[in-house]
Image 1 (tube, protein in one colour):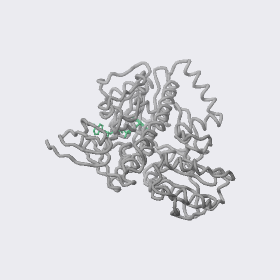
Image 2 (spheres, helix red, strand yellow):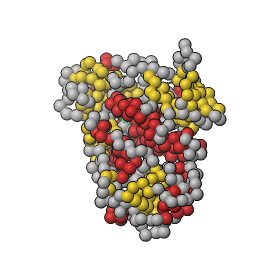
Image 3 (cartoon, helix red, strand yellow):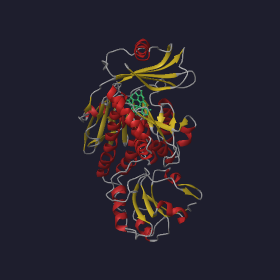
Image 4 (cartoon, helix red, strand yellow):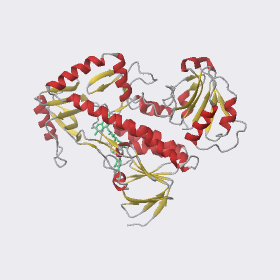
Length: 503
Ligand SMILES: Cc1cc2nc3c(=O)[nH]c(=O)nc-3n(C[C@H](O)[C@H](O)[C@H](O)COP(=O)(O)OP(=O)(O)OC[C@H]3O[C@@H](n4cnc5c(N)ncnc54)[C@H](O)[C@@H]3O)c2cc1C
């Protein structure tokens, strides 16, 4: 046992996708981070999540990371809502697809990036306790050592120790069914991909999951498994035979797992200097593949805010906007996964409801609405204004020497000037070290319908001046103060970072 104490600015419990993404975001802003991970080795055998959705792809693009992920994944032109296909090809994005990529690969790439940025990832290190006061938080580790930091973020999964020790409730609904899952080889594979075939005794899927590998999933609606029930190949094969009448000769599993449809959400995402993100803050059935995506998006929302507070640029109250913005998002994910699980049931009433949903999804507006929810492209954070672009993600405009998202690689705020508004110089100068004033030619501005836009580091629109309307500079100052903290000097001459032209 060692009594060693180390210091850092932010300590993160859990090196899953959420903790790793948060570490990358904090390091971009120059914040010292230690990531504590209980497991000694990465979870290479656990494929778990199989897809990155549009908003996650855009966030990776905004940080210049997307190419690494594209190189290890395969795009698919649609997603599913309770097994009903939702085409994405007309989605309003540069990336209208689901990127099929294993979670283990996502974690490997994020860990690689975190290490490049200088984050300390401490594997084989379990957080067992913590204490906090108004000056900081001290994490107690299993080996008897401690880490002192300004903030602790629990990214430690659905059974979060941090959440439990913080006394944060996790209300929600209990499991009503059991899903079993295996990545297996099949001696007698079906002649076609089977996506959620519904039969009298339950539903099942058989999908290719890598060369010669299949992912087999069974959903039993008349059984809620006990936690102690073993997860074995024999058990999965037996359930599949019960539902499908065959086990397709499954053998050689590389991963077996079981989960229910319990859906729970932390009642608050913050307790003083302790925050929660990812599965530690919300769990649900993996319908529509939203868990990992929501966690990575939590991290993208929290990272720059926490960095601004740690660097004493913004007041601690900025962290409360993390809960205001992200809690409703996960609440909606829980709602749609409950709806999807209900639609998978195999009784006659559900069959009638599915047929109605199948008809409704034929209507483009309905399909787009559901796709927008699953892919998180329809998010609009509350920003206090009525303009529809306010709070939404900024589209990735083409620039004469690149794209708008490239300007977000360093996770800094951008004040985009599309028509040469000189008044912006003096306003921006007040936050000179924290916002980049970037001028572009207005050729494409008409399609955006704005003369100027304030874009937060996470790519969301925080203020805008509509084309032709007088820019509300007081509202701009208020927005800059809200998101970046108080102005650091009297308005002087602005630093204009770049002149660009929209194609
Ligand atoms: C079968 C299945 C399929 C899924 N498919 C999808 C999908 O297609 N798309 C999608 O978006 N999501 C999917 N998910 C959900 C996704 O896997 C999770 O939402 C995601 O892993 C959450 O990431 P996280 O980083 O928040 O938590 P986790 O991945 O659970 O990571 C938590 C980490 O914290 C560590 N830890 C725990 N306690 C401690 C401690 N005390 N000290 C230190 N370390 C600790 C753990 O070892 C772990 O590494 C699926 C899940 C399952 C089960």
